[in-house]
Length: 428
Ligand code: S3P
Image (tube, rainbow, N blue to C red):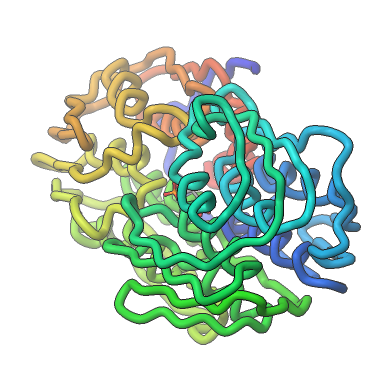
């Protein structure tokens, strides 16, 4: 953990950047490629720490994985022939690794133990363990399976019909990945649609899955066939530069290869509602995960209300949206976002505490926050809470702050965006 003093002197940001690979899709490419027997190739893989944790876990299960730049080759004996790992599987800071692996390992005939870092140790796992137990999974963990370390005795599973109590792609995906190995047809009912990368990738690997009006229907016992996965750029990473371009003076940023899956693009809708000057040019609309080139310019922004079904489509972008709102005229209200409390840190408290230190007019509510703008931001010393997205929010705030901003731990940004500061420097 090393602190970093950011001395930017309110620069203009001009130029183009190619956004690094999507974290959610990168994780899944390794997971699906490891379940399938044979070879899978991946391009555009995110070399963030979270995705490297996923690779390490599958290597311990006997899967051959080679990384060459952002290309990854996976050669697997298939889930039925994985090796029982001799050591604990370490998932680092990654909730997606921990929760999706729980679903996968429940249906693999092995005994495994998983644990992660201090943040993972505080994140709720019963939201995944409970439905998996209904399928017959044997999972043990602290507080009856709520917290890591988790021990899993994989075995036979039955399909379930499950109504999701929270909008969570991690929970949905864990159930579907267990459902792949279960007897019968698994049904997952979502009241608010969460990111659908698992559903899309199951089709890419040759499976049949139906999604109609928020109801996912998936027959167990299907086999996955290795394939090529092209990972789109991560819109959640692009979001930091979309906001940076809109709030810094004299800026124009071109973001290439941004994944614009409609279950992830809430940030675009919010920027449009707030009056951002933005142009979106689609690349291949028929790709498994469509991408676009997005150009953003310095903008006059107005406050907005963000609530309801858009929340899962931008849940990871709320820290940077809060910063955006500090520069918009009028009130921005963010509601229905209590899930922020169980992310890498409590992101309602973290965002409000840290932006307040820079002089923002922001208050926490039970399920979100209220921001009044525009407010010039001052210098200050910020905590990241070890959370990559809080770190990047602080770094973007430093671009408009009058004075220096210190981050207590800038290294945590490597969880999802190792080249973040290089990209900032490229645009200055
Ligand atoms: C993710 C789902 C979301 C998101 C996380 C990645 C995924 O979490 O916040 O960064 O890859 O499925 P939840 O499922 O908890 O909403």
